[in-house]
Image 1 (cartoon, rainbow, N blue to C red):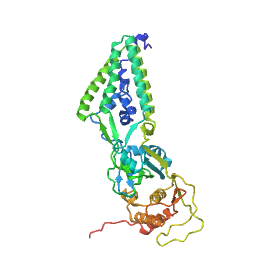
Image 2 (cartoon, one colour):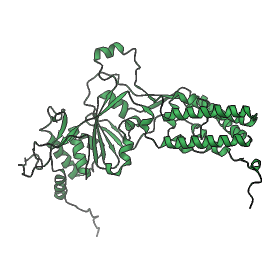
Image 3 (cartoon, one colour):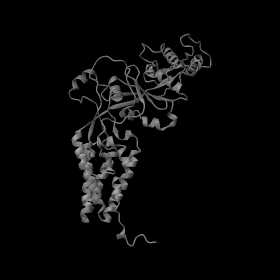
Image 4 (cartoon, helix red, strand yellow):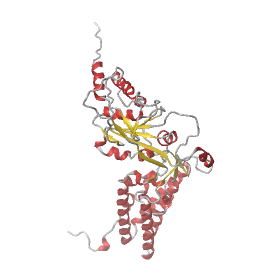
Length: 429
């Protein structure tokens, strides 16, 4: 059985398919890659059609979850992308063991330590909104540089070997990325609070699917910019000009693939090896965490410690207001992350850290039943004696102290007291 008579009879007429494969890996980081000025480089880019769209997204893609203000009453039925990256939400959601967990962090803006006098003095010199950008030398810029190097190499090979079709394919497919870069380049501006009126504490609780609670201590500026204001994309090219540019880019892609199919075999092999290598690189980069691509130095995230009061063997006298509360003073080691076996215990710890259950009702985190409503009321009654002035949590060496409470037993007693009844339709005789 003979497949090839000689090497010259081996043709790669379908080599152009390699230029348009790998759309999923390129699309995974579409928005952050077009935010970088490296998008203007003329370079080989796998599946460039992923950047040619009828319309561009108006905001960053959100993550599944709910963001609720503990006292502000703000509610967002999704988690903004930058907040999600800052909280490393993608890591929490990847591990099954993170279900029913509580984490507490503090997020500060880069200029939060500047006093009011200096802030007023520099207000006209600084941007009116916090700017976020991709890392200058992250994985995506390195891939763009690699694509540029391959384009230059293929351009030189085409000239040396006097392959006109390969030269045309190199120019069309390389400058195609520059063209769509101009059409897709944008800037991310986060919202800024202009009013100076007094507002309630701005702490936020992020509730991810599976009972993952992340309590965020922050001020109103950070809460509004990260959690409640939309992350809008401000493009440098209007929609009409972008659509005309997309048409030209589509033509360049088609003619580039046709030219590549008519190139000589050595250049086709070079193109094929280049696209294979670039596809592997983009697939690897797509598997990395998003924090590898974003420059998040505008915000400082630090763990906020808390510790629970353990149960004593000796029973503690119950009060009429809180029959299931215990007032032990011995504490366990402080931590910023804890896993719980049940949703009830995880929810109690999140409530104890925030000092209120209003956000639970606001976001409908717990079932809306009489038993759960009574349980939430008792949870607030347990916390009331320990919170000074209603806004400051009890602390021990800087860590928030969570009073011990038989939260599971309390909920069980309320459910039993309510009973289970089935409403039956009346029968008309």
